[in-house]
Length: 75
Image (cartoon, rainbow, N blue to C red):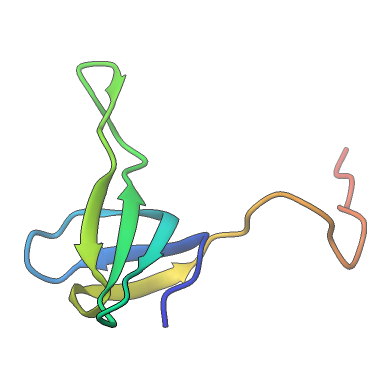
């Protein structure tokens, strides 16, 4: 299962990005909205919806919010 904040890649197009939304429909279809981290001509690339089955998990990206441990400060 893909979660919000996961870094994913579409198996068909190669589109990569971070999961920013998840929609679950009455018929059981699950769609995932993926936002690319790249820019095109200096502008953000528009986020795209994919069926969950098309996506492979690349690695988990950490979203902001409360953390178990305070961040380490590096001089």
